[in-house]
Length: 421
Image (cartoon, rainbow, N blue to C red; front, side):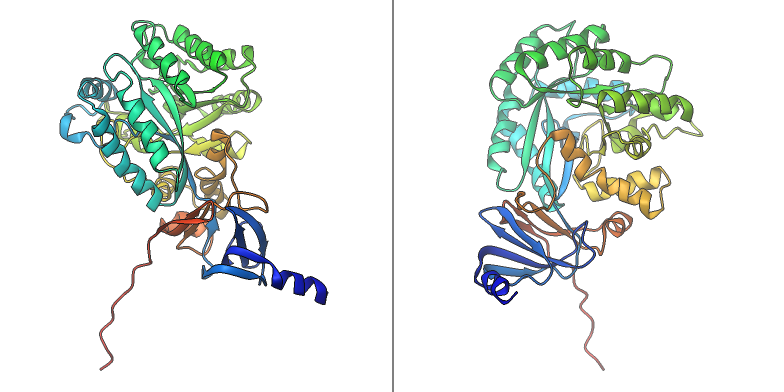
């Protein structure tokens, strides 16, 4: 026993983070990091460290994961009008604005959102980038540079995305091909903007299969449960053996379905491994505009899918544009909003919500995740005692490390009380 203690005391590591509250451990633990890897995870670790920090018993995890965001069209409220507040208007206004996008413009707007995301504790992200005759490849090139420049703090996946359809605009196919050949990580489609949505789905899968990449769709973005493009996605997923490689976002139709019908879809997604991403900030803003009372929420009940074993996530989607004229890239805030909208309050329910902005979306991105021996030292500390409290209180991120290197810090605010007497 003494020899084991002596060998531990002589062990040298780059960094030790002490008194961390880590999922799976009953007691506070110390985290040792060497060469960007977690090399020890245990209470009261004895070793020699290049530097140490005390985390004070705060929630410590691998960071938030944003599995669906649009960096290229963020922060464009100054060049768009919002009158009706509908999906159709948002698509139209954004399509018109895209023609004026430059690489520098896209980079600056995306950087402002990315920096906010990092400071809010996000360590992994999937961004959609529109490629079409209006945007060309300008936005794609800008986001590629963002991906490189912010790799010190954030892993970014780029989804080459056909927002405005394919079958009526075949030039977009060529642009998707170029983007995938030039390093896009996956391909995405938007059947609801295409006059032939089923063919749109098939073309996107063709492109994905050709390049060996995953697929992500914006799907069923309305409140009519009678007509759905999900069957086409399920059919292609099975035919292409793409189980576990497909995600669908929005799915607002689910909010208009009775529970028994949803249970059938839960089974379908579970069998096919299709992931569901709810984008509630956008969906709350755009859905139900035709009603002046008892306005539907229009938010997919993704937690029901998560509780049944389907990979389900909560994500940001848009920030400060006609689709979502607010936002700060905070997944802590988004998770709290989801819990409010869905009227979730029990600890087990809020634990599920926390997983939907952390481990579940990491699975969608197929990136390594979780604090474990031999895993990446991607570490974020929240100002909360446990994950449930973090959701209840919209706990801010305090500090973070990427591959063992400190990437941000946000000291907790202090009250300045008057002196005694």
